[in-house]
Image 1 (cartoon, helix red, strand yellow):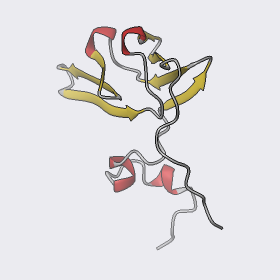
Image 2 (cartoon, one colour; image 1 turned 135 degrees about the vertical axis):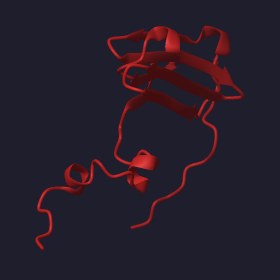
Image 3 (cartoon, helix red, strand yellow; image 1 turned 180 degrees about the vertical axis):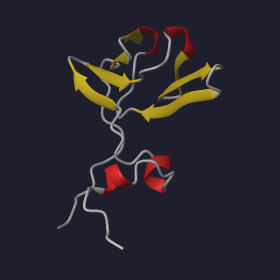
Length: 123
């Protein structure tokens, strides 16, 4: 029996393995800081704007979505929570969903400092 010669991501893509369960290798979002705000961009194709819930509570941004294709008997869900390293101005958060991409702008509270601490990585 010959072993596969293609990368694991291609020959194992149809198996429900821990890497798929935990989202390893599925970079569906980008988060960066720019002009005193965090910008979050999430690829969420297949959802309608009305199916997406975004809320901010106790320093965490929660994004959830659910859609159902009754003709195919399929249900698609998305759930992710983001904890940000600085305090956010909750009343100033804005979001937009367009062409399968959710964008969220999270203004940083004036005078906010980084939470946590830096950990040195040894080699």
